[in-house]
Amino acid sequence: MLQSGSPSLTGGGIVAVLVTVLVTWLFYGVTLHLAATFFIGDVPSQLAAKAAVAPTIVSLILQRWGVESGVVSADLGVAVVLLLTLVADGIAISLSYRLSTRSTAPLVALHLAFAAVLGFALNNIFGFF
Image 1 (cartoon, rainbow, N blue to C red):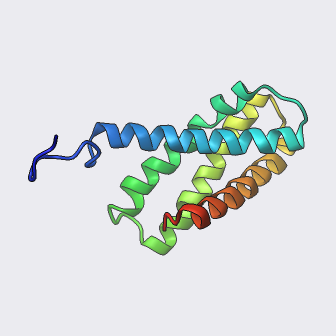
Image 2: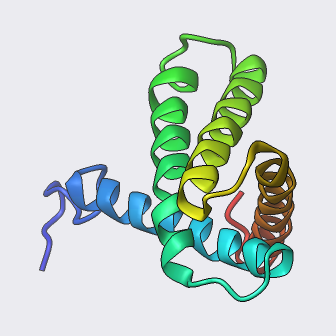
């Protein structure tokens, strides 16, 4: 039992960071697998799990040390985080699925669309924001 004044289990420590990384990685992996299945056809889910690591790390690092630390303004920071996350996503997808740039671009766009739709749906259900 935690006493008042003692730190909570998820109070911004290593557990909170690990859970955030795992949940974000799972979200990107699921949405990428859905987009890849729609675009390419039957593909192994391991490819999506491997490719989802890059946008997870890039987006979380840029949000934490780019936008929240005040390096860039909040309005500009959202655009920078989105653009660099899409670039990392494209590179990871191209390498994991062994696609050309011409085939990677539509898959990245589909991944963004699937992530946006699922993100909005989960936000409406659970009210995260």
